[in-house]
Length: 378
Image (cartoon, helix red, strand yellow):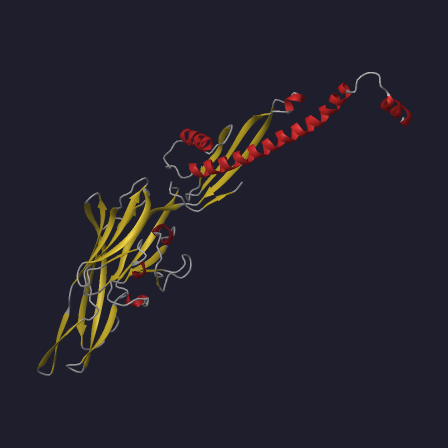
């Protein structure tokens, strides 16, 4: 074999060029196949990113959208994100608790450049994606707990609709102070003492456009006594206060009754399913005449929130100074959370017992177009 190779190398008859070009064919094919393979890898990476983005996008479309429209939206979003080929909505399921599970795929016959030498004109590229989206808040039901203080004040829930820019009133809870003075006698001398904390009447209204509709009221009634109250009603507040004039301790009992309007109504149940943003605001209309907002870093610390949902919800914790509050995140699903506002009568930071406007909120969650906790599963 070696002798034959030596003779071939020494031969001067004929031409080496055909043999040289023939030897280049497998080399060119190998390099070309490598280039096409690299193109396929890059195409697949781009398709995966486009499909993931499109799958996430269709979970933020209105729940009322039909399946054919959602399929078309998937394809449109896939193309808009530079995806190549056809995207398919394999499944889109909404569980009873509002959790969404979506499965998608995409395929593309990528044209080749060098593999055509081997009569391979295209190679199939396929990707898959999956998303789980948690339910989000669609309704918040407010119930006043206790409101107190000498200053009238109103807590308002504002909402900005999807695609909107202007916040609109959704609910107001307005408190009006009703002063109470207890008059009593010691011997033949009369004395009067004013209850120091201050309670009154709170009215909750749902607002549609510019029209408020009263849905709940709470009326607090105060009585005084020179002796302590025995067996006060459940939920009653008994407050002893010393009268320096008569040198006696006066006891005040405060009871508050909450009533839905009408009596069999749902109360202050606010539909927030069409809202992309929510914020709370307290306006103190007498006294300091101040305004505090959950979405204002300068005043959000006047809001107190219950601790981690699912554990103990009290005591309330003052919002850290400089922090913005996302109302959607502080109202848990199918649980009752507690909130309160301090009306400016105390310097902050201060313990939650110094707050003046207490209420609780129960959240109802379902599938909604609002972005919520979402995880890619595939």
